[in-house]
Length: 172
Image 1: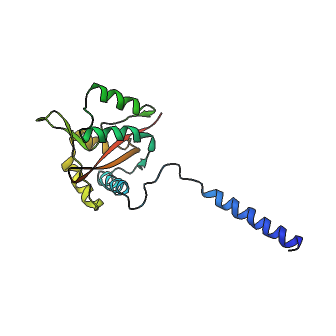
Image 2 (image 1 turned 90 degrees about the vertical axis):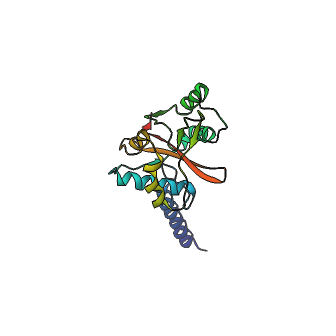
Image 3 (image 1 turned 120 degrees about the vertical axis):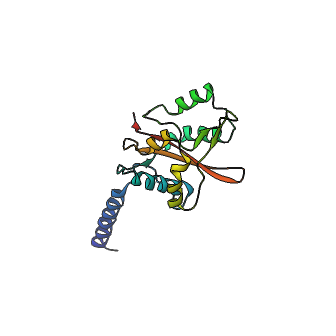
């Protein structure tokens, strides 16, 4: 290879590397296409769109520890008491406007929290069922244009797949 060919190839390589670097990593995590979390996120976005909310909702991995605690509470592995509330508050540090968890409700008969949002492969059906599964506070939170961040967890309990979500307005 002569010097001219070498310089041409080197220049082309540098140009390709520069173009490849332009894309960069997304600033917010993306749920893997086809994953259960992606289906739930799609359902939540459809619900918000039907409520007239145009502001985007992005997945946020910083809320993951709090969402994992909510799963433990929903599965009955952790009692929803003062200690659980302290653990949730600690896991939510760094966020403004964190709302009550979506997908769990207080069972008056047992005094426990229980999961209420059933997962479906059909995001449209999940979006349609949300008003039936959520209390007024959760509906208002999901319909708020101020809410921009979410972390979603799916889990199995007694042969049924449920989901929970933790939503927040912003990072501090």
